[in-house]
Structures are given as C-alpha cells and as structure tokens.
Length: 452
Image 1 (cartoon, rainbow, N blue to C red):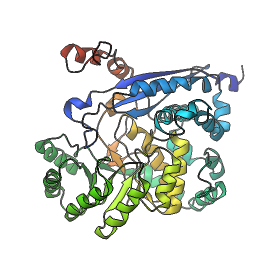
Image 2: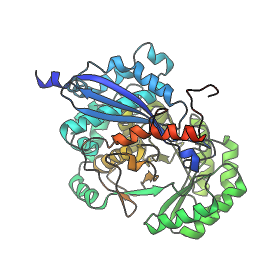
Image 3: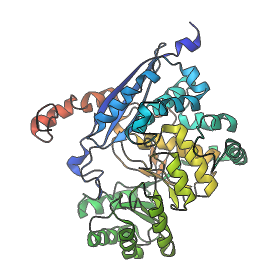
Image 4: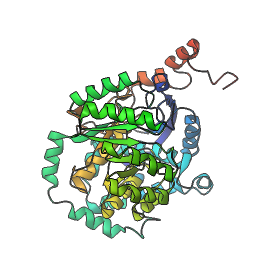
C-alpha cells in the first residue's frame, strides 16, 4: 500500500469534555457568570495508525450541539487522505464550509463554524505530527507561496489578494533567522487575565495580583461591566499593587450598549487603560467604530475578536477602523487556515494582533500562531502579547510552558491539543468519573434525568 493510501482517514471521533470551573467562579465575567470551561474534542485516525487531536472551546451547556455539528461533517473527512488534503488545503477548507445543505445553518459562523474549527485544528495537529514539527515551525518553514495557498480568499480579495499576501511575507523575511534565535531563547510575552475574573473576592484578587506580579507579569486584565462602583474599587486595588508602570486592560464581554460603553469608560479613564475589550455586541462593527473614535482622545484602545465569527467580519472591523487590537481566537473561526488570513489583513491595516486565549486548549494552540506571526509577518513583539489563563493546562500531554511571563516555543510535534487519557476518563460529559461523583453530591444536575 502506497504512502497516500496509508494516510487515508478511517475514523473521526468526537467527545464532549467539560471541566466544572463554575464551582469557583473561574472564567466568570459580566456576561458569562457561571461558565464550565469545555471543549468538543476530536480524534482523527489514519489507516497507518496515526492519531491526531483538535478541539473547539465552549462554556458548558451547548457543547453537545457542537459535537453533533462535527458529526454531521464526518462524511466530508473520513475517506479523504491526508496527502490530498494538505496538497490543496484551501479547497478542502472550502468543502467543509460549503456543503450545500449544512452551509444553510451557518454560513461560516455559529455552531457549524465552531465544528469546522475543531476539525481543521485536528488536521493541523496531524500535519505537524506527520512531519515531526510543532505547528509554529511547520508554518514558519513554508515559503510564502505555499502558505498563501492554504487560504481561501473568497470574500476578502477586495482588501487583500494572494499576490499582495505573498509580497508581504517576502518583505518580512529579512531577519527571520535572528528572530528565530530570539524566540527560542526568550519566548513570547504573555499577559494574564487570571487575576481578574468578576466572581473573585477582593482577597483572591489581591493574592493573585501579587502572585503574578512576582512571576514577572507586566500586563494585567480585569473583567468589568457589572457595577461601575465595584469596577472602580477593583481597579484601584489592582493599580495599588501593580503600580502605574505596568499595563492594565479591561474586558466587558459584550454587556454594554454603544453609548453606555463610552460613558462607562470615561469614568475609568484615570486608570490609564490600554484597551477595553468587547465593549458591545461582537457583531456591531460600526458600534465598535463609534466607541473607538470616542475613546481615542482618552488614549484607550478598543480590542475585539474572540467572538468574531469569520474573516469577513474581521475585514470590516479593520476597514472601519473599529479596533486597535485584533484578537483572533484559535477555535472561534475556521481554524488555522482562516486565521492566517486575518493576520495578513491586520498586518496590511497596521493593527496589532493580541490573541484571545485562556479557555480549554486555547493557550496551547494560539501560541503557535503568534510565534509564526513574529517570525514571518509582523517581525516584532512590540506592544503585542498573548493572553494567559492558568487553567486546564495540566490536562494536556504537552501543556504550554511559561517562564518569566513568556510563552516558550513548543517543541512537541503537532498543535499541543492532545488531552491525557485520564482527563478524558474523568471529564467526558456526562459519563466521566468526576462528573458522576459531582452528580452524586448534588453539585450539578445529571442531564440524563428529568429536569435538565
């Protein structure tokens, strides 16, 4: 049997994995008050026995819907060969997003696009493992023509063409070797949101601020938007600990109307905030633009992207000058291929990319993308950071490595998205041993019983 047939995909399994983070208010913000950090977890296998894993992040309830969407796309994946997929990855990506009946319930957004992201992320893990490279290096080793061939430019060619993208990457090539040496030695700067969950007590806030300050962090982010007086008190507490030389940002997680966002942020101006994240509906491009214009005199930037559903919306955010910080999410839009297009557009518009991370597996994945950007596109780490949240990393076989508040470049082949077998045994929902124990204690309601 030739290599091509050996690499035929023979199965695609998906599991609902959930962690009970709501018990301690981890991940809580003004909109998502009780999230249980979760993921739809995909496993792909080839005839030869190669195994790869990928995921898309969720907040608990509804993960079962994403799992179903992934299963609906299974016939488009099983039976394909990895060789054929990677030979024309952009066409395969379009085949997943353009199945004529499934596309109707997107298109290229919502649950079906989360499903696409999980599958595409799994395929990148497979590609990296087949070539024995971490995904960031797999990307960095590609010539510009090859990398650009991975991207579906439909709907964005009015802003950036394939030839423009190739030229941009060629122009950025100078100094790549020096940047590689720097990355391998120094890593990539992180900022922390772990201090700032809205459900935390003041004592926890103080303890965590001091902890992360001692670990070398110079950039902190707090959740805001529930109560202005509480926001002021919490920001005062944080500034008293981290001082004024360190950076501080806030995140409203979509709770405000446009005018409300502007007025709320004016009351927080004195805290010298780097950005306000998701100040209003993630779909309101012109609303973000209005907020951005109003906050410009206050020297507060606008950041968004974790809930931006596809490259088209990112295109319009950039065209409208609605954001100063572009926050791609490694599991929100259609996986690595589509995310590359956003990096290219942001670079053309001169907007910094500071990825969203923190949910299950997001830190593990997004580090690869930002490191590629540093090596091959932006060529700088200035005023750029990757979000870091210290949750669920111990559940992965190859978790992120943070040293002195910096992401160290991953060395394991693939996309760092393989969960430990024990994690699956414990946290698969609802049959995992940890969930069975919590149902027995009455901490959560068993969905297999009436009343769910």
